[in-house]
Image 1 (tube, rainbow, N blue to C red):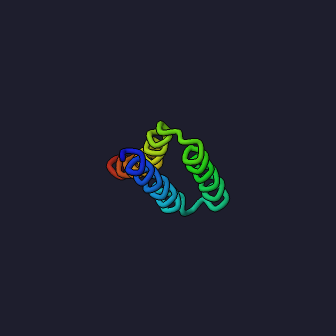
Image 2 (cartoon, one colour):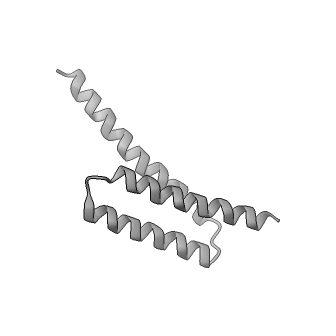
Image 3 (spheres, rainbow, N blue to C red):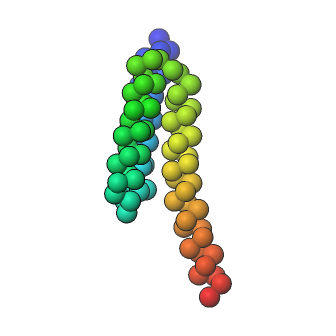
Length: 83
C-alpha cells in the first residue's frame, strides 16, 4: 500500500523538477535543454530501478534550482542597496 503512494509522489516530484528547471533557466537555451534531459534521465532511471532514495535527490535538485534563482534575486537587491 505504501509503494503506490511513494511512486505517485516520486513522479510528481520529477514533474515538478522539470517544471522548475523550465522556468528558472528561461534565458539559457542549450543549457536548459541539457538539464531537462539529464533530470528526466535521472527520474526515469530512479523510477525504473526502484530507487526510493532518488526522490530525495530530486527534491534536493528542486531546492538547488530555486535557491540559485533566489540567490540571484538577493544579489540584485543588494546591488541596488549600494546605490
